[in-house]
Length: 309
Image 1 (cartoon, rainbow, N blue to C red):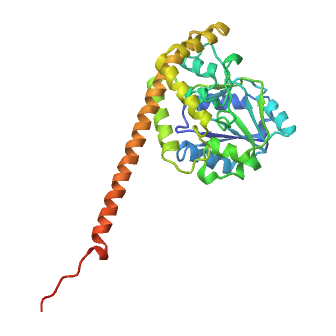
Image 2 (image 1 turned 90 degrees about the vertical axis):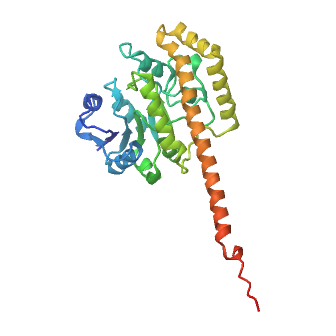
Image 3 (image 1 turned 120 degrees about the vertical axis):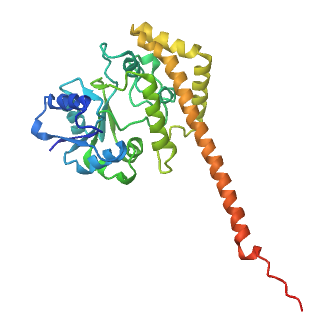
């Protein structure tokens, strides 16, 4: 077996999953060397870890159910890169599909579905306009949406505490980007439901876990860039400039999602930050109450009764 395709999914009857499976089966690659591993148990990250454990192929491809492979030669190109010594392989850009909804087109154009990640230079894909590319000395958010590993390398990582970017850091080998936009990431067609999903995702898999190794905010450079994002979302003008720069190269009004999406993410992550601060304060008060109770109940705090003669 050469390719193992891991796909976490909630519903085996999901039409998007069926589309993805069809696109895998349409690859011009020997299908007896391709196994598809859909996982329905657990949350998305534990499902991915379970799928990696089950993989028997030489190469493990990490997919999401909302992915679709546009290029029937992708597996051949990926296999060729591994034959040249790659440890992991991915496409440089997401597929830009004119018939897709405008929100998905926007995410494809900037190279990811989180504008903060874009501002920090940590998107997992590049934008379709090179002048808008941002880079960082820190590892991008690798590991999902058509990301391929040597199976023996990804299996050696800490699968008990799996998170895509964390485990990608553990592989830390020769990561090769194919000059391709073969992966169509059909993220969402409605902003509000997507923001609710991102809130839950960030809360459960980032804020409420203390075993994370990859950090969205880690260096001083990250915090300065975050400040730049906040200023951009508040003052509007920098976001509009980015939209016009993109529009002048690729004439699509989807670029003008940039400001409302940036503002919406600022509000969403701002609410999550307030929730985290309140949780810390509540925890601190709880600890203080426990300390006071312990002091009250400790033997040294109980004075022996005085007896009279």
